[in-house]
Image 1 (cartoon, rainbow, N blue to C red):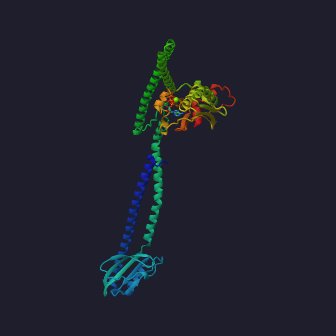
Image 2: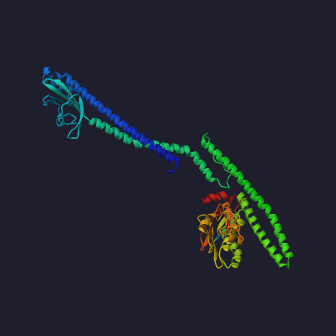
Image 3: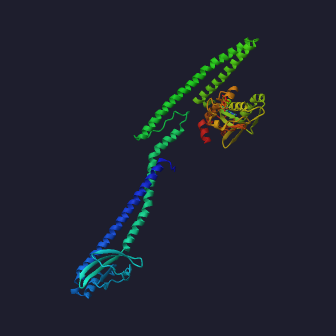
Length: 492
Ligand SMILES: Nc1ncnc2c1ncn2[C@@H]1O[C@H](COP(=O)(O)OP(=O)(O)OP(=O)(O)O)[C@@H](O)[C@H]1O
Ligand SMILES: [Mg+2]
């Protein structure tokens, strides 16, 4: 679960809103219920006290105190009904006080007498010593000898118990409501964003070599459908522009090859004819050098344009990378010796890969060429090959000038050179490594580099290793060869 995803943030927002609403609503309901219950209790007690006052206490002179006590006992049965009833004479002496209720909810003997004179009907909450709370309504009534007081009360314990139950239900309901709403909200938002995830996955698979693919268009009739349609149109335009670019590069480099070959031939003939004129020969020589440099760049561009277009894989064969590295290193050792550099080749056993041996050789040549070019005399270049966990590896390491850390991410870019002046002097155009990268991509492999300035550089080549199908080790039938896709999937 990604906390920065829209579905997570939406769910978190709604969960927070629901919690606040639930707490506020629960609080209001709790206070409302409490108010209603207390008000109801107060009204009942006041009404009852009023009835006792009017029907019995007001007529105490005619009925007699004994009769009033009997009537209260029989008519209201305070002990059975959990009530508190107290009748007080004008001289503050108590005529009647109810006994301990059968439910033992409070002790009437603990209810203190009213200290102050009572003007009209009042209610009060009396907290007894045993922590019990009684709601008592007091009604003053003028009768024989002055103002009598009728007090009728009931315990608040049932109201408090009800409120407690209500609160517990709210507290239990909150996490349940939260879980259901957040879970449901997350599920629904994830479902709503599923088309976006599909579009993202397809977009991630689009590369410069795979611009033919299109994003899925959800038939929702909303902004998402419009967005994917617009993105698809943009990809089509991009694809067209890239195709155009590629065709231009391929055509231009192809067209330049022939005149350059003719120029080289002509210059060589001219140079032979200018025998005996050293100055003219020198000038022809330097033009020839530039023409050769140009031819090399054009060859590089032509190779890149073919690799970009995706070369046919029908030419692919099993290649022993170890042997290829050893023979190439051997061929280039003369060049290295001229510069006073030693080349070492460490290849413990055969390392089989599937690919175009010419292109793979080009990779090794370009890497060795760089290693020799950018290593001062007396240095050492090492080529090693190996295989592990289905991956073939080839490393080219040198003890040369190294690449500055800031330049490392750009060394595979076309026409990038760290030190332009030095590179040009060495005849470099900055496309050797981009060709290496293009060949590796075409073979489902990759190339990476580690380098430390003035210490040396190490290029790593990784390719899917070819594992022969049993019984077809030497020359497997074409149908049994794994395809490039199969190789790619084996790598992942
Ligand atoms: N082994 C290395 N040691 C130090 N720097 C290197 C090494 N390999 C490549 N570089 C740097 O990376 C740059 C790009 O290399 P790349 O092979 O693409 O171009 P180049 O060698 O200059 O020219 P080209 O290969 O086209 O003749 C080089 O100019 C160089 O600065
Ligand atoms: Mg190079």
